[in-house]
Image (cartoon, rainbow over all chains, first blue to last red; front, top):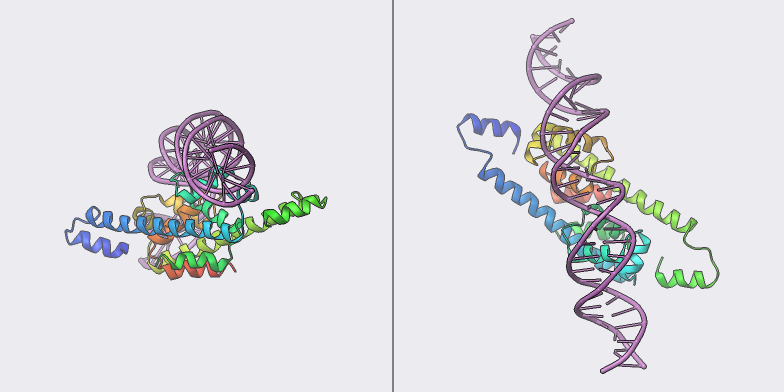
Length: 105
Length: 105
DNA sequence: TGTAAATATGTCAACATGGACATATACTGC
DNA sequence: GCAGTATATGTCCATGTTGACATATTTACA
């Protein structure tokens, strides 16, 4: 929602900011989660395609086997940064990464 | 490099792991940096397109104006997570995000 | 079944990133 | 120049994320 629209709604006496913002936030949060899941699945696909074990990939990107396992398990302690680094290190091409985004739509 | 290839090179007596790994790491690191820069520029574009001030966008995503400024300035304390959240919150469509990736190639 | 490799799970201390705040600087219309 | 708004920069400390490690579980295959 544009700031101007928000101001208009508020001027009109609308209780904006609670239910509506909540829904939008959920939507945005959902998009991020979907994106992460899609990228995670791309990591596993790419790693297997490159015939790398989790330990191999971990060495490549100077991480640890347990971290890779956590990435692929969707562990909440894993950042988007790490997921993308794993994707790149596993040999994924730019078009593979884009494909992961496409799956989000 | 596949683990098998690495093992073969090592078996052949190659000093793998230093210069080569260093170069590959740089390459991967460079890809990540390029990706971030591309997404950052997409954030600013998307924010302006939506006619949001940094303060507006910050409120939308429950962040702060200074964080948004740091995102757009490419501050090192900004994660990929935050960049993508800003991108989504600023109203970028999935195809805009993909386009940012494309620019990386 | 046994055994080795691969993967999963839990923990933790070190480091990265976060929002918030203060404040400086830049921009815009007057 | 001035006021109002937008953006930039620096700091703080709470929380998030990390690699490393130990260990458990699963898988592959003789």
